[in-house]
Structures are given as C-alpha cells and as structure tokens.
Image (cartoon, rainbow, N blue to C red):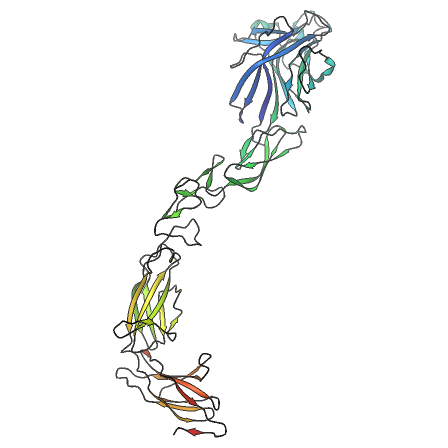
Amino acid sequence: MSNQISSIQLIDRFQLTDSESTVYPKLCNPKSEFTCSSHVFHTCSEKLVSCQWSSFCLFFFSKNIPSKPSSHWDAITEMDEHNRPIHTFQVCHVMEPNQNNWLRTNWIPRQAAQKIYVELRFTLRDCNSIPWVSGTCKETFNLLYFETDEPHGATAHFHTNDYAKIDTIAADESFTQTDLGDRVLRLNTEVREVGPIARKGFYLAFQDVGACIALVSVRVYYKKCPSTLRNLAAFPDTVPRVDSSSLVEVRGACVENAEERDTPRLYCGADGDWLVPLGRCVCSIGYEESDGLCVACRPGFYKAFAGNIKCSKCPPHSSSHTEGSAQCHCEKNYYRASKDPPTMACTRPPSSPRNMVFNINETALFLEWTPPSDTGGRKDVSYNVFCFRCGADGQACEACNNNVRFVPKPTGLTSTSVVVQDFVAHANYTFQIEALNGVSGLGRSERQLANITISTEQAGPALVGVVRKDWASQTSIALSWQETEQPHAVILDYEIKYYEKEQEQLSYSSTRTKSPSVIVAGLKPSTVYAFHVRARTLAGYSSYSPKFEFATGDESKGFSKNA
C-alpha cells in the first residue's frame, strides 16, 4: 500500500457557501439571465495543507426549456443553524410536471487533465415531505458535460443535445419540513469522474427534471502525482493515464551536485500515488545529503568519493578552507604519498635511527640500531646502509668496493640489523644508516642519517705475502706462502680464490687450507690461472693478496717443478 500523498489539481471551484477568503456570488447584471458566482482557483502544496486562493467572476447560465419565465434556477442566500450565510443555486418547481431546467457553468479549460472529477455538494427535499406532489416531484437531477476547443459566446444558442450525460445524481440524505424549521443542513457530497477529455475545455450542466434542489458548491479537479524528491532525484508533476490499470513511468533528474548511480525512476498510479521507486542518485565528491539535497562540505571537512555518505572531518595535520572540498591539504612539512588514500593523515619523514652498536665475530660484522624516535606517523619505515672506508686519521673516506657484502641487503631494509661480510682487516670503516618512509624525499628536509665508525686494526689478520708455485702437473698446481705474523690472533685457515686468467669476471673457484700451502687440483692442462690468498682469524678475513699467475704443465712434458 503506497504511503505517498497524491495531489489534486483544482481546475475550477464554484464556491457558493460561506468560507474564509471566498468571494460570495453576486449578480453581475440583474437584468440578464447570467448569475455571477465566485470562481475560486485553488492550488495546493504536495501535502495539500498550504493553499493559495484567488477569485474571479464565474457565470452560470440558467435556462428553462421550454421557456417559462417563472421556472429556472435562482441564486439564493440562506442562513444555516449557526446563522452563517449559505449561497446556493436553487430550483424547486415540484408542482408542475415536465420540468427541464438547466444550469450551466462557463467554459472550463481542462489544463493537463485527461480524466476530470466533479464534486457536488447539495441538498435535496424529500418529496414525501411535500403534499400533493406525488406525480410531479423528483429526487434526482442530471449532471452533463460538453467538450469544446474554445468557449462559446454568451449569445450563442444553447443546444441541450450537445451535452453528454455523466450520471443521474441522487441524495443519500434528503431534508424535510422539520429540518427547514430547525435550519438543519442535510448536505450531500457526490463525486463523479469524466474522461478521457480530448478537447481543450468543457462545460458542465445541471438538469433539473422536477426536484427541489439547492446546489451549494461544485469542485472540478483532476488527480496527478505531485512533483517530488526521491533518492536525490526530482520527479515532475505527472498526470496518470485514463486507464487506471496502467502506470506512467517517469525518469527523475538528479538534484544539483548529485550523479546517477542507477537511473532513478518512479511510476505514477491512477490515484496520484508514486509507486515502485527504482534507481537512485548519490551526492558528488565534496557534497553530502541533507534533507533530500546535496550540500557542500563545510570548511574543515571533505568527501573524496561520490556516494550518500557524510562529509568527514579533515585527517590530522591537514585542513580544507573552502566549501565542497574533495580532499584536505597537508600542513607545512607534512605530506601525503601518491598511494595514500585521502582519508589518511598527512605524515612527515622520520628522524634518524638511534643507538647504533656493532659486534665482530669470526667472519662478520654485525650492525644493530633502534628505530627513530619519530616515525613521522607512518608504519612503512625502511633503512639504507652506506659503507665508507677511511684513512688512518678518519679522513679521505671513499665508498666501499663491491667485495664488501651485506646480508640480507644494504638498501630497503625493514629490520634494524644487517650483517657485513668480506670487510678488510687493519682498516677504518664508517657506516651510515638512513631512515626513510613513504614521504621521504617529498619535501626539502635533510636526510636522516646516523653514523658509526669501526676500526678493524687489531681484529683481523695481516695480508698474505708472496705466493710461490712449488710444482705443477697437467691438472694440478702446488702453492705455498709465508705464514703471517699474528701476535694477538690465531690463523684459523686460509682461503684460496682462483680462476682462468681471462675469466675473472665470469666465474671463480675457491678452496681452504689450515696450513700455508695447498695443492689445487682439477685444472686444465697448459692453462694460466690467477690465484689470491687471504687469512682468517676469529675477527674475520684479511684482504686478498695480490694476484699471482701460474700455468699448469703441458701434456707432452707431464710433471714440472719450480726451479
């Protein structure tokens, strides 16, 4: 069951009773057959509670057929039981047979109507309460209409055959002589519908055939589905179809600052009710719904997405200064990364890492630190590690070569530690730890670095000196070298790296030995190999020795010995 309130569009109202803002009928020309009644044009709001009234003169044409000077409708004012004047058109020629008295309205434009409704308010005398009229008194009258495209002139001949009968009107409640004495008003209300109306206008007529009638008011109207707002879409006034079983589909237009999500539609029913709402509109970016409209977000608020959600307060460290903002702008020194949603607070780069410490074991240097005291309001903090090898006085630093390795990697670290391998003993290193987050680099702020300087002077082994070839075969070479002097550390072993002379950048092999000599097997005959040797202590490795080149023996010569 629809809960929509339909609208009745009043075409004409012939108000003959006493009512506020009503102009009562008066004779426009006492000598003519035309009687002037107030014509009240009535327009109402959607809820039919706020009405505007305006009045102008409406002519009723009274005609008796055949012409009898004393037999016609009369404009009469009487008083009701509350001493209020009642202005009526009356006819009461019940003593004479064959009455045919007509009362006609002026021409009524049909406006947008296809079907019209006529509401009559009248009183009718009970024939049984009148003596000696059993053969001539009637208790009904006829309602008729005539369609035309333009009004007929006042002097045009009146043809009753032009009028089509709408219905015979009878009273639900008639009055008697007693009611007259007590001035009790037995008022009847009857509504009839007419349609479809095809011409531009029409006349209404009332035919008396011998009743005692007082016509109090006539209201002519049509039903429409009133203009309305639904789901942020506006729907215009719509007149239903004459066929009461069919609906009129109406497409709505989104209100200002709204956009279609699904095509908004309503269906206008025959009784002026809106039915079956479909589709909707949503408020655009920067606007929110309020009382069926889309209003701009206030300063300090924003809405980044279209939809029927409320504007949100600006996230921390951001603000909006104009109405209808789609996003809030970051405060000075605060930023929003390209992938940050508009709902996220503005953030800033982190401070530098803290509390850097190191530890050296047998083979590696362990660096650790704690996160920045200020992460900038973000969780995506990462770290880069930079390595520099410096001179004895801590000056003249240069970036570490590729021999120094970082585990797991030197950049993009998400943990607060890194392992440094293959560093050189008897050297000074400076490590810089840089903290970054998603907005680092967006502003002009300085890089957030923490430094630590480490000396490997007393920890690592000395460099291996001259490497000699003791002998060589087709597939093997025997090497030896002078054992390094380590007054504070024990040599654990030596690592020998070797490769074909021209293949250093492609691949290399390595082997280990605990003594200062080694036999390297599995080599190619008559091939020159390059060898590097380094020592390892608990503190780590020394640097590799310089390159020493030796060749394997020729297949034809077999074993060869160093001279």
